[in-house]
Length: 137
Length: 166
Image (cartoon, rainbow over all chains, first blue to last red; front, side, top):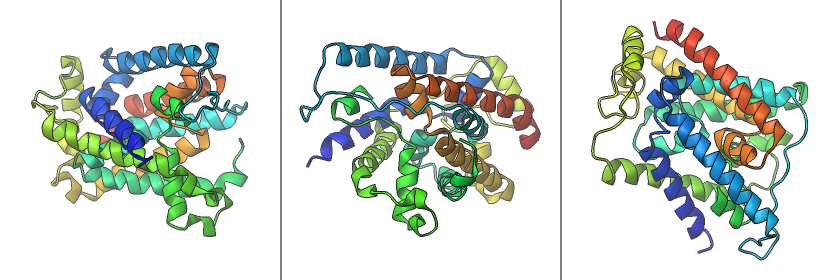
């Protein structure tokens, strides 16, 4: 039962990203070619709402549903892995137009071809796990 | 994202890829996958929900109008032999049953997935974890990652994609 709320969040996420066309390969292509405000609007709005929301959570010391104080883990401070990993991710994003969320959403929508992307993504994640200790971070 | 924070979790889709690797037994070959994936079950439920959401949105909440692009974008796409959206979310050139007959298309999809999967773990997050959660939480590392996303995306979209699709 406690999982229901996560299911609902997921459904909401899937519907919003599909209806806003953020799952569309075309929209990602267009974003990287600066030919539409569309994706910048979506991501920008999410970040503005998120920033204000998190600040309100923190400033008012709001508690989460379990009564614990709300805090997000800080990302570790380093450079190489964020930058290089980011570029590799971007290459893939620009090619197939799907980041990890939309991969699942699109498979749910019935685009079986994206199943191949998922296999690739799982292999890529696995490969990282194998190489992790050899990579600069 | 805010809802999940309220539930005491952080929003990030790509961690699920790691969880799935672990479930399939990747822990045998790498420490990275030896973690308590059962604690991540909530996130897999979000994935299931997202799939359902995608299904609901395309089956019941769609009027077939679909993506409308800048005409300039359409011309560029035509030059690369990519079909116009005409109400579709994804180009047939990549995902139609016909296209999936082609080993080249398989290669593109697999390579794209590979880059996304590898890059996202190396960078420690994807669009949801870095661009949305991280930037909202004013994290400098996330900004570095997002700049990286864009450099990679621009290189692919402007330089490599036209060569690959030719």
